[in-house]
Amino acid sequence: NLNINANTNENTNWDPAVGLSNTTLDLGAGADSLYLNANANGSGVLEAYGATNTTINTDDLSSPGGDDYISINASAGNWWDNPAEKSTAIAFDKSILNTGAGNDQINLNANATGAETHAYGALDSIISTGAGNDNLNINANTNENTNWDPAVGLSNTTLDLGAGADSLYLNAN
Image 1 (cartoon, rainbow, N blue to C red):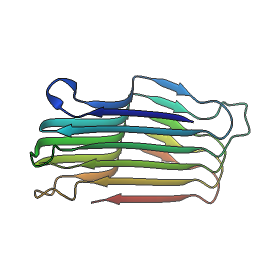
Image 2 (image 1 turned 30 degrees about the vertical axis):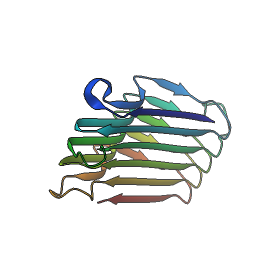
Image 3 (image 1 turned 120 degrees about the vertical axis):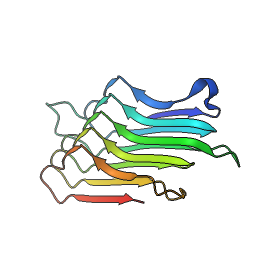
């Protein structure tokens, strides 16, 4: 199990919040669990990235696979009653996820609140789950916004769920 939490609570000097950046993460064979959480709170311009410019491998090529659990979350939003000018949350950005064979559970969540918001579940990425009965849940949310800014589940992303009885759930609001 690997848990990574990145939090910024005042964007003046510490924004953005990033779980993994410019990283290759090989979790090896077997049933793996990965939890990435990036949370940016404050006023002004906020950014949160669960993973950006990153490759995540949960199985090596010689293993029979494992039942992996991946949860990647990005949240950018207000500091109490002081709304952010612009909030961007991207769960999986310019990254690659390979889970290999097995019954994998993947959750990508992005939530942005503020005056101008953008939320993406996966942007400019590649997701490959291999053989097995895989579940992929992607949520992008900007629903507290009054200007109807974009919430996008998948954008410019290649998705390959492999062989098996797979399920894909996309929610963008």
